[in-house]
Image 1 (tube, one colour):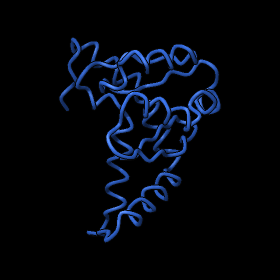
Image 2 (cartoon, one colour; image 1 turned 180 degrees about the vertical axis):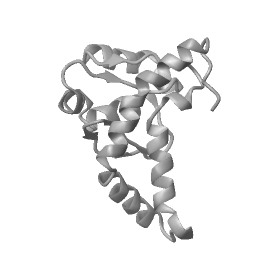
Image 3 (cartoon, one colour; image 1 turned 45 degrees about the vertical axis):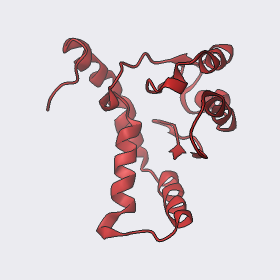
Amino acid sequence: MIWGAFSCNGTVELQVVQGRQTAAGYVEMLQQASLTTEGPRLCGNDWVFQQDNATIHNVRLTKNFLQENSITLLDHPACSPDLNPIENIRGWMVREIYKNGHQFQVVDALREAIFTFWSNIPTSLLETLASSMAKQILEVINNNGRAPHY
């Protein structure tokens, strides 16, 4: 598993997750990703961090870390991957990595491809996904908490 974060201004260095993720491992990974400095670098001082409602994101250890580091969270409804723009990045990367039926024989080659594509995500894609969040959230609010059906 690989973790990443982005804004309309760029990406945070990908983090490789070894084994099953725990809250302690998640907090350590956020520290290794330098989230406390990368967030302001990419978004300015009034940045907001979005994560889903995975159990490790909602335990006291994680909440304490975020609070102690003054990291503001976007309140994210349960079961709402449509409101998480990283899913769109993941989808784009999967399409690019496996384009023309490309397959990988070893994990290291796949990991290298993931890191290469991550470092080459078009700025226009980052900008589009980040700027679409306000409209998507408003549509969910107007739909009484349900994602709109297109």
